Image 1 (cartoon, rainbow, N blue to C red):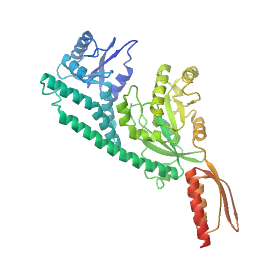
Image 2 (image 1 turned 90 degrees about the vertical axis):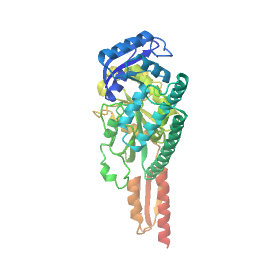
Image 3 (image 1 turned 120 degrees about the vertical axis):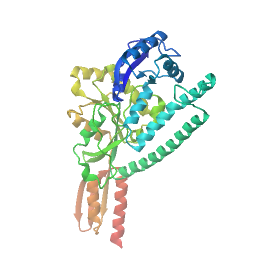
Image 4 (image 1 turned 45 degrees about the horizontal axis):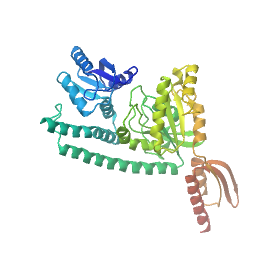
Length: 431
């Protein structure tokens, strides 16, 4: 679809780079743009003269859609629609983002989250359309049909049903996370802005382990995330396993953040973000090749989102170092020192810095505890030894006529299970 983008800022220089990339991600062709520096107009967002200019550009380019990088209220959308040629739609950046989400939602969870965000976006507009229709005795609103009290009620009821289904999914996922921890896995989550390279990093960190070897242990592991230069490539979560310094780790890639998202969109994706909030460690991936001010702004936003519920340690990962000079990297690190005093800098594409990142991961994960068990010889003793080799780090083992002494390190949950199994062996030997 041929589109014209529009953006107004209170001061400074309007940057339309991101809104153009978003439009392209939705499959549109940007044919022109209109920008303005001035206070917002309550009726039209842009000034009346600039709206006339926009209308002329629509005619000149035969455009079918106008996309505002600003958030439009229902009345502004209505008024702008009346100023443009008939049949030309007007949407804002949030409607565009929801359209992209809808295109990329390939799982039940993602589809529910997108629908929830769309309904939260639509609810105030349904209320405004009802008010406008009553005030102007207008049977419809921009050709979208009649909106009455039943429409608002239907939206609220659907929101409630979706929230219930997503809550059920969250409970199921919480149980799955605990099963994984009980199996000796540490949980690491990737967070950050869309297109920062999280999916590429997931591939890099998990590349040394063949998932096929572990399918019997974890049949619920998801497909490998796609890696591409598209915004919002990953809408759901993708989990892969790896081993770092003898620790079995599950790494989960999550939905990417984007600038200026309103709270109602972030809340709609809380079900996916639970993988971040409940992780043992979060890798916050930042695109270091972006302008310094952009890097800092995105880092602040990420911390704001994560600080609300996340309690795990955060490692800031400056990715795409292959695209910057040493001087540029130093400038970024200096600018974010207060927020991320000790970041790891890597290139997920080339592999530079990955060894340093692996070391930081193991040092930041919850420490393993040490344990010493002495068990008698039974038919099942070697089964326990084999299980500990798979789920812990054995530091010493010795055999004598009275039994087996095993010293090992592991997660607390594994130690508790080992103790239970050892007690079972003692009972077995005494029976």
